Image 1 (spheres, rainbow, N blue to C red):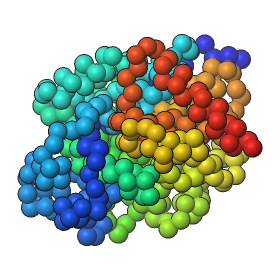
Image 2 (cartoon, rainbow, N blue to C red; image 1 turned 90 degrees about the vertical axis):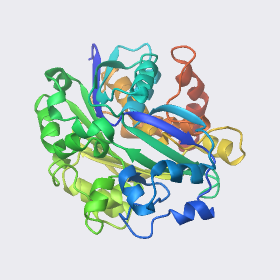
Image 3 (cartoon, rainbow, N blue to C red; image 1 turned 180 degrees about the vertical axis):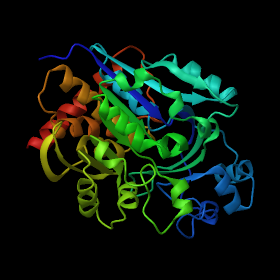
Image 4 (cartoon, rainbow, N blue to C red; image 1 turned 45 degrees about the vertical axis):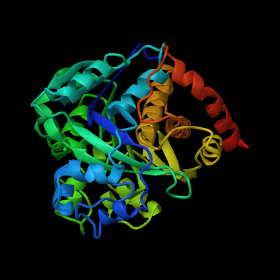
Length: 397
């Protein structure tokens, strides 16, 4: 039976991204600020560091280092960023015209960055009635991108200021949040009070019948506190049994599980009674596995990235970067969940959801920044359809 309306509510990381698109990770300047050991506060490709910890590592104020790293140039793009809000925006864009509502719960500060985010989000198809002003400093990230890194596939480094998100907690989530069909906890390691209480929030959502999705971000707080120990998800491992779908990247999966390989990491998550797992790995295959009422039984397998997108990147047929690829992957998966639930599917097809995630993440490489501002509703999905069609042929050939 077709579902009448789908409501998605998400909370987690939303911030201003300042994108610097041509910073060489092999330059003498970058290498002088590079991490020497895990959790020391230095820069590391693919990873995030907190601004305060980086300043201690560098023994310089961040604006001074920023000038050195970028040779004093302005950002190539200032954009809406964050693993939760970017995923929700993409999901809302590709499900345009369907009977769904996507809401974001989060915070900003009383500053110029906060005003920028408010103005930008008003132009995007996400309900921001629960986006609150708390404190004075809006969360932000300076993103350094080297498009030539990893044999031309590109990579990024993130220096994050948590700002007002330190003070955003469970008390800011109202009863309506838990009345949603799908709840998303995205990048909560950058919203520390939500992250600390993640287990009980997930348990509350499951008690209300919600589908729960968690997508992770590099957890520098726990990396700094216990660099030799695996990261907790919440206070400990309490979150896993209440997660219907965990989406993480390779590094985060290994740090959360304490394992050295992706197959062992998936075995860890499944042993903790996680319903389903998707692990992205940059330009490499995506790993999936499930054993749940929502997805059924899906044996551990790999799905390739889009050859069409990889070709465009290698041949320099686009002017983009890898910022927001993982976030858009999550948004594509959420969009597929919406499509499938609206169609009345008894079980969600995990491979179909992953395919839309892969194409969504790949498409984000074709423009700068994670958030795409449409000229008209439905433009982004319309542009993605030829790549999605190519991908379906690729995996079924």
